[in-house]
Length: 218
Image (cartoon, rainbow, N blue to C red):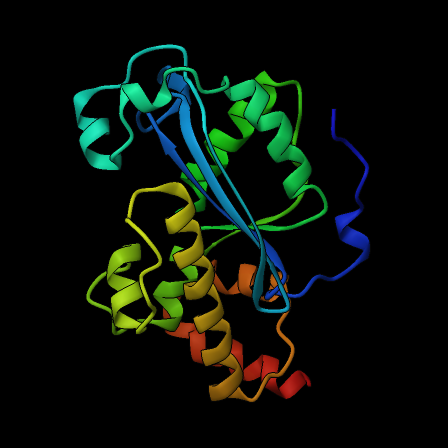
């Protein structure tokens, strides 16, 4: 079980060095029997994607026609794929020692914790929601769905939306675009993960005040 191997509180980590992940699932909540069917993630170091992780996983039952249509993942594709526990054991090594970013992270974190627990593993790092940060940085976006933000920010599409690796890559580029925007507008060369986590929790009306205070602290 991965516990206590990394002391996240002792070292302040950079916002541009994270793991960005995305799950595709059979439904909205593992508490009601839903399971992960695909995980995609990218490791970002100093603003560059340096490693990728993508796996389909067999949830142990047939997925609905709606999920097949929504994700493009079919029952035929899942047949013969490894079980969730096997994939998560491998994925736990990928994320060990890194903070996590996801678009609507509360959703992905529920499935991450649930699937890791079934595999008798755990993740002890910190998580930040790119959707919440985007509501502060891209307040003029029509909405804050990933597809809308990618278009709004002028980010190239790297694959089909609602496939885990493509969504993770585009979320990573969105994350970096927000960091770059803060750097440019506020003259803050170094941005820490905990600062964006804090930004995601404040009222969006106080975004400028918060970022301006970070600039003054330099």
